[in-house]
Amino acid sequence: MNAVCPACGVPVVPGYVRCPKCHAGLPLAGRTKRTTADPGGTAVARRGFPISAVLVAVGVAAAIFLVFGLRRGTAPSAAEPSVLPGPVEAVAVHRPAPPVAAPLAVPATEPARADTREPDRRAAAAELEVTLRRQRLWGRAEIVGQRIDVRSGSCADKAMPPAIDGARAVLHGAGLTKLRCLEQSGAVVFERDL
Image (cartoon, rainbow, N blue to C red; front, side, top):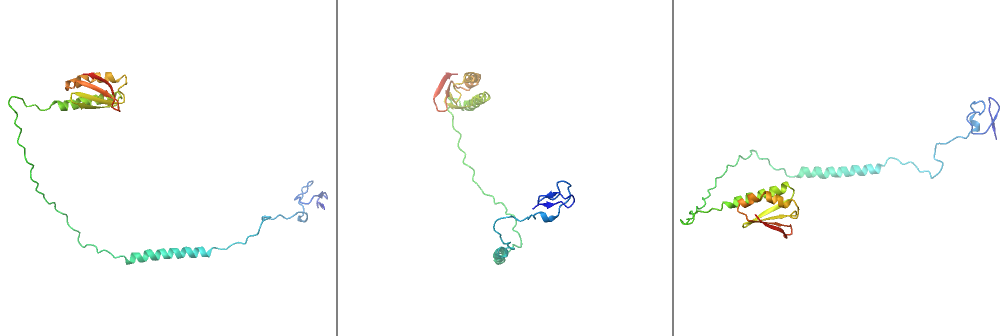
């Protein structure tokens, strides 16, 4: 069933909006009406506003308000002090003086001999550690009698002997006679006289 264009009389296939020849608008009789609805599936009824959910939320909020509101109202209020306490004065504590020891008598034949070399030895060991740190040889020095032990993971490094030779005069001047270089495990890598 073909429709005919009212303007020029040309037969037109149903569904055209305009005539293919004269481009005149065609009447709606020959066209099918399109729908905007989804053409298939099951129809679902529209649901209304969820009143039950709103009622539950309002009930929960009211219960929370009542619990915390009543708890605050029944809590015993602490009486505020009318006057703040004044500052506390310090109490002097009497401590007895420590007993003074009698000075030691030094025999006349032997001169008084304070161990003045110990600070020199510690200073010399500290200087050796600084020298090793500057050259990134990282070692710890420990004094054992007249010997100094250097514990380092770099004892086998080629830069270690020149670094020790640089501090040799200070170490010998502090009364140290031997130097041992030990690995971290404690194994002796080398030992030398100062």
